[in-house]
Image (tube, rainbow over all chains, first blue to last red; front, side, top):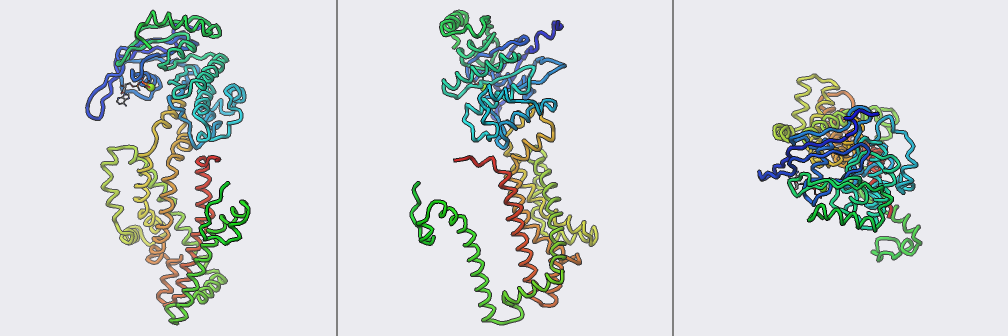
Length: 246
Length: 276
Ligand SMILES: Nc1ncnc2c1ncn2[C@@H]1O[C@H](COP(=O)(O)OP(=O)(O)OP(=O)(O)O)[C@@H](O)[C@H]1O
Ligand SMILES: [Mg+2]
């Protein structure tokens, strides 16, 4: 068995994060934000727009070091992290496949990606440049890149934003398929409650800015039981527990 | 497909042809235009030389004769080669040093604020002063010659590459940080492609400027090269030879532009073209 500490790969304890705008106005984006994500768990950070979700992810990704508090990512072994950003962020001058392979560590550079590309419906698009992809396809490529790296923790920042509902729904299913093939500890940011209920094991509900945790909502049901009927039950019990949210 | 209204600058046959024929004509038209235009210039030059016959104003035929003679005895290629070597060396030094400084200044505001006056100062030092000082300080040698040309070009490269570095998109660097790209991958796949348009701009203006300065450097302190030959024939008052060397070198630079610069640029920007 793994030691107890390893069971919690992601532990967040951010005391405060304050932005200072160019005019000298300071905005406190996060305050006393603490939560954990357990091994192999798919967690969602749910909060209203502008509450500080992207800010939280940027801190966890190591892109913003100007905050007080701490967080722990898995140490030793595979400590790689992967991210799907709010925009796809593919290198426009590299093909889809090159974009994916460049993100891989040296030991995986030559690995066979056929399965992953097939699952995500990108098999025929490996040699296209990002400018030749629709937004939906570009987001799939960003998902492929994240999963190809076999990360210890996966971060997703509203990966289905600004897509039409049908495309978003297809991508959610694709995400579930790839994720189920290799369940990875994942933290996804969203402000879409239905999406959170459909995808996650646990929803971390954030308050308005400055963001802090309002509470947790566990969805213990296996994902393939979450049919429309069950989803509306989940929705109702969520709204009972968190009246006024979403 | 609709064909655009006939503007009258194409022969009637081409306008009435099938789309593939008019495509070929469209591809050939610019080449033909350039050829006819240059031919016209030659003709004008020949007429003028014929009207005012003088040793100081030879016609195109005479220049061509000198060119052939110099090519036959090998002098032309020896001196062209010497100049071309200096142009290449100075270009590489100027691009590498200028890009490094430019990118550093463009990505560090405080350094930029401190060094910006230096850049302006160097931009405004006349090329001739740099060349003379280089020869005085470092002697009449090849390193001084190439260094002087590079120093003349570096401030231009710095200014262009500083713009490029300011325009870098931080989201790509952040993606590279999250996925732990190595240093070489970051330079090759993230940094250089973003700087490519600026590198191309600096290269273009660079080559044009550098080869002109190289001629001055050769005139002042080298014993071979096109600049040296021009100085020699200036003392002999041989205008035909001066024009022969000048035209030969211009032709070489045009060929380099067509065979090296443009293909490299097309390759570097292939991802921009999207199929219709
Ligand atoms: N660089 C910055 N400088 C100043 N303020 C910022 C900066 N980045 C974010 N903020 C502020 O911090 C707050 C949280 O921003 P953040 O981008 O984390 O929101 P979000 O929850 O991701 O919103 P959305 O759902 O719209 O993406 C916002 O009010 C924003 O104005
Ligand atoms: Mg956001």
